[in-house]
Length: 582
Image 1 (cartoon, rainbow, N blue to C red):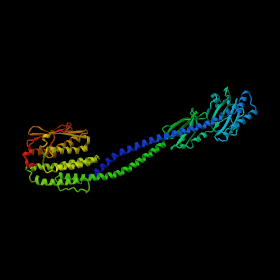
Image 2: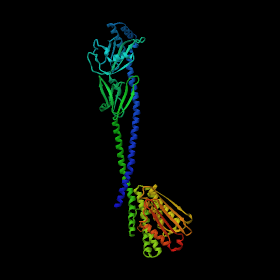
Image 3: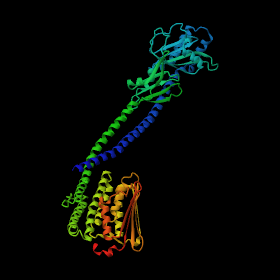
Image 4: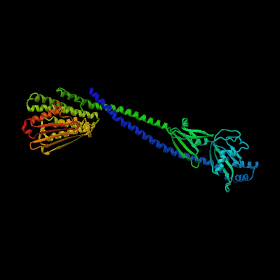
């Protein structure tokens, strides 16, 4: 029972180790591939979304620019500006007319758009028009407009629209402290290109931030617009903690973008057409990583459930296989000690029942054979040969079952099934009542035995059999070669880590003698110091050969790491001289 439990525990351990790596690799690689695919898909969708968003912002700013070019579409406004440019002072009447005319021109825009903060027109360093939807204060009288950066930039732009970053206005008698984004340009004579005035349109940054209100990327984000000088124009975030992902600093009243931590965010950037602005999206990486961790946790949980179920089924299967084989092994151990009273009790409707029945028949036959022949006729040549044979049979069975148990340890269940059927065929040969067989039958048995070992060791074992067809009908003792071949497998091949080759050659020396050579390139040993009497199989084979042919010779040559060569030379006509021995 202790052995059975040890075997089951070992098989369970090997099962867990053999399944853990594939399961975990599947989980890790599967999650990584899924995450990579999900990230790629998200970036593709996000890129398309941002492209559409940038186009909407571009259209919005283009609408604001239309306000700047409105004066060019009104002849009276342009005529008044031309008159202003030809005289030193603007009369109150002319300025009133201009205010009304231009006010009517943009009134439809002012009152419809709630993001329209203020408009201002400055001619010859004098304010000739001012209006605001949010600030009722008036511009400071006599204010020097030329000192304003936006004014100078508009003059240098020579009619092009200038986008001015968020700033506070200092030229109202009541300062509101609200930051505005401005579009400034010069109103010029279309022919001479002479500037008439500077026009400035103020809008609130929040008007651009409204474009971010309906964004949904599936993860926390911060969206912002920046100009070519890294000035922050507008920004909005889905979560408050995302505000810390964008690094900014104050520079002369302007909020400058200094960078972001690319370990925490994915950055997507898109230019806004016809503007110096870029649209930027920072997506939170930590949320993506948390989703990945949840997938990992789910996969590991599923693996744990699967491995528990598999362990339960595996233990049932291994117990069903190991318990009968362990019981047979214990019975054979008792038989080797000379106890033939043991009996295997198998389970019905189970694949090992046939093997168990064969084992019981073998024990019974061995007991009868020993009682009738070995004990009663030990002194006779025929009885001695059968007694040696009876010792060899349980030894062979014991070692072969050990090979099958090794297949269980290695988890080779298909090879185990094939091995059990091969063992049944081999048992029929072992349990034959005749002690002498043709060399053809013996070679066939050895070939089947090596196939059984090949199923266990795979590529580590190779073998070849060379035979002279002219001598295959020669009569030899049954199982005469098997102990030497088994010795090459167990003591030659198994201790080595590299593949081993076993060669069997049967040839005719002359008209009276044959030679059988079993060689391997295995671990080898010092044949000068070896006592073969301790090996049941080899010593019995030697005795059986010499019983039938006293002139037979058996030589074993081996050195450590140099393999082993066994040479058997015997007469061809041993059967003719020993007819009773069959």
